[in-house]
Image (cartoon, rainbow, N blue to C red; front, side):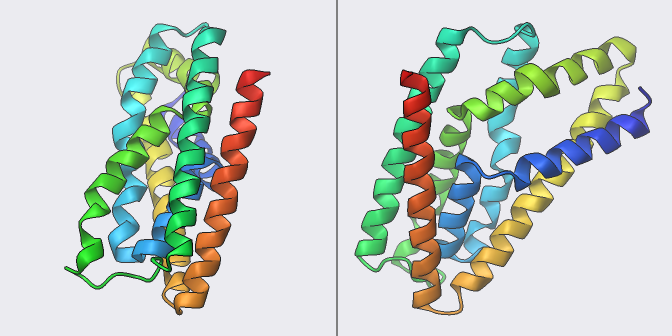
Length: 207
């Protein structure tokens, strides 16, 4: 496949991955409502940090990850989602979802939120399944053809992914800035998303 086609394919897959509901999208929603668009925008870059080890592992085990490993990832990811849901619920209950003033007391957790999002993505089995069954085979085929080909696919994928993530932060962050009631409504939606996704993931992993 020529680089232009791989670029378009990567762009389409990156957009669909970011637009699909999932644990990371729930985190984007919660951070946007709580911190506001400017302080949550860096979360859109999380996949650039969390995905490389996933991609490398999936390329090394292209036939698919062992079922046991996927189950452990699902259990760990589900537990993390439930924990994040509980944390968001405590923030909501304590009325701490207002957008913080720059340099105020809520400014400190921003960096920790980034690395928590990285951990969430590393424990997200959706990412492992995607790169094992979809993205990995495409990259492997591109590597066999020519060196620039995988770069074309990855460029298209991550341009679309990060741009859509950033748009999500800006849109939902702007809604949250309409006032405490809007921020609390978005926070409540993120609580429901976290708990529903986490419990469903734990159920699937235990089944």
